[in-house]
Length: 98
Image (tube, rainbow, N blue to C red):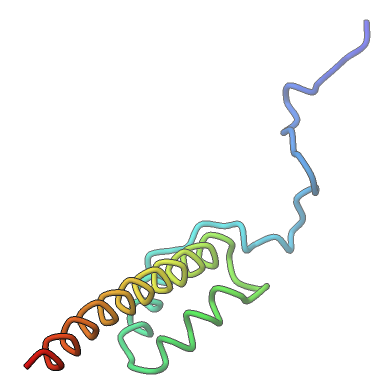
């Protein structure tokens, strides 16, 4: 009878975990509070969003959060541009009719 202890061994897809894969750990409340405090500083927050989103040493969950934040920012900016274009055209049309 062959002993198959595969039910005791964790099944991984892809890479085997290493001690250096600490970026997979959950982000602590302390780290989120520090992140939030940094995000309150004007101009620094814009730079840090890009740093956290595209840093290879950052934890995956934090990097994914800031990538999603950048996508939302891009959508909001596009909506603002469309709204300003519509209202700008309406104001110009109203001004030319008077």
